[in-house]
Amino acid sequence: MAFGATRIFPNDLNPSVAIGFNLPMNEGGVFTPNYQTQQAIKNNLINYFLTNPGERPGNPTFGAGIRNFIFTQIDTQDLNYIKDDVQTKLTTFFPDVLVQELTVLPTETENEIQINITYSVKDTGINDTLSLSFN
Image (tube, rainbow, N blue to C red; front, top):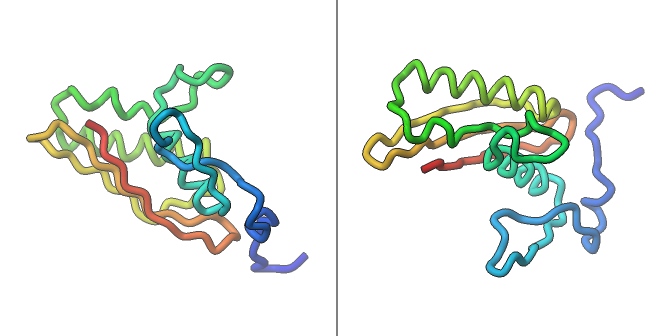
């Protein structure tokens, strides 16, 4: 067994094999395929954050549930709770995703929560950033 070996995803080497589809979907429900594992992981994270627990049949605990906080008074304690909750849920549902930096910022005038995640994926060399706004 090699130490420090990087996982290679065979589908990334075949440009004609789609791995997933991009979010958001185009008008009319058209799926735009993506062909790289990095983009598929990012879309999976977006899907997770846009899902509330109980929305996915067969997996009622899947989803970040961030929209529950949008119409509440947000203070520092809530922001810390959201940050800890997101970190815990990512560790549970995406164990290969290592969060490098996680920030949760409120925009009080627009009743919005901004989540910024810098992450890497174990043994792949994939590093990326995800920014999502919830309003």
